[in-house]
Image (cartoon, rainbow over all chains, first blue to last red; front, side, top):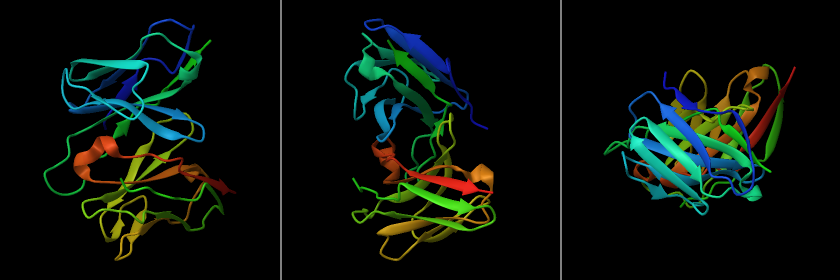
Length: 117
Length: 111
């Protein structure tokens, strides 16, 4: 079974701090994703990466950056945390899509509930 | 991008069959339909995916009519452990990053 591990289940930080959220997957997946999940808004894609050192902006990248130095690890960075970044953060990984046929499922971690005070 | 519409919530009782319908009027030719399940305090989990007609696995069935403008996730004989949020996603396989998880359907199963 694919295992996506997020370093913390709960995290409390202060406004203005630089915050690192870590995600590790053990299935050699090329694709990795960071989402945030807020009540009434569903999951929204922040950034994704389809290879080491590659990154692409998702729908809501403002205030965030990412790092992918190794294939198994994808880090989300809040450059200067603000209260509106209080949320549940979910990391996912997947194989790249095939040339034909259905896409690959995304495998999610259990999330990090981040509170910014 | 195909937008999806699904009920906000549904209630059922143990042992019943539950059908959750998703509307996607703007589905494109290359789009597939994928369903995920999310339990509280966990990340979403892939359930089933299909392109047309019917797909069945050990967990659920997915019915897709010929016009593909809607799809129905069918959960046979639900149990309390099926209480979760169910998301319908529509998109092309090569646009993995463009898949949109909406707010989903919150299914509550009662004893």
